[in-house]
Length: 192
Ligand SMILES: Nc1ncnc2c1ncn2[C@@H]1O[C@H](COP(=O)(O)OP(=O)(O)OP(=O)(O)O)[C@@H](O)[C@H]1O
Ligand SMILES: Nc1nc2c(ncn2[C@@H]2O[C@H](COP(=O)(O)O)[C@@H](O)[C@H]2O)c(=O)[nH]1
Image (cartoon, rainbow, N blue to C red):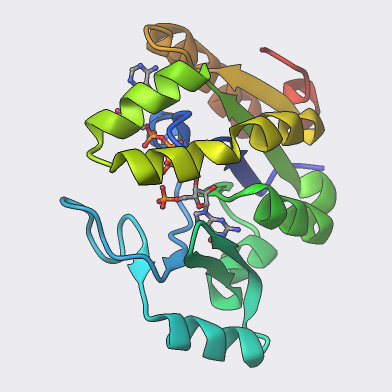
């Protein structure tokens, strides 16, 4: 069975977006009710929506999954995954553990679940350089241990500590090549 969907999950600032862009696959841009950060672009980083718009879509059963993460809603509209159902190039998406679990339930062997981990201190430093307040850093890292434990279900775990990006690039090439050959099964191992 070939892979249609690559899901990245892991703690905040572990490097999911960095790895997603290095993988170079078409991305699924999800919805959020959080305000954009400086430099983030609507439709590129997220579709920035109001909480009520997101709740309405959910009530209409047009959201495949939706989660509340530290006070904001994040979700994947059904419409965004229609291309996966139709086939074509594998796509990548960043989700928390609940969203990742839901998409795995739906797409089963067609998903490659990549866990991204980094030392907690690296994550803390990265969050501070991204400009988060000490309060938000504390909140985001309060789920660090749970999010690391949840990586146990992943097909593959990438260890993205500071200074490791050259190795990540090699692994990204390996993953892309495996996907190109339609050989998802060979990618299912723990590279931590
Ligand atoms: N290996 C690395 N070495 C140094 N800096 C890194 C590394 N990986 C990511 N970063 C930096 O850490 C910050 C957070 O990375 P990124 O946005 O990719 O994390 P994320 O897991 O997507 O975060 P979040 O879930 O909080 O949105 C970014 O500024 C990024 O440039
Ligand atoms: N279940 C979902 N989780 C999502 C989705 N989009 C993002 N996320 C998760 O939220 C955190 C925080 O993101 P940030 O941009 O505010 O730093 C991110 O790490 C993902 O785990 C989604 O559509 N569904």
